[in-house]
Image (cartoon, rainbow, N blue to C red; front, side, top):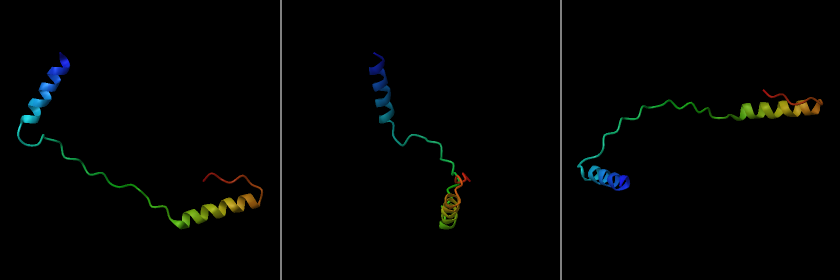
Length: 60
């Protein structure tokens, strides 16, 4: 039975002393940019201006 052999393999592995070896994690730089109110206010003003002048609001 393959399932039983898998269970025995896991059991043998659990009986070994010590922790299993794992490769250390490589640190990744945090690329998150905090949204600022300045950009948000600028975007809101641009949308309001476009709507007030009967333009379709710009995407960027």
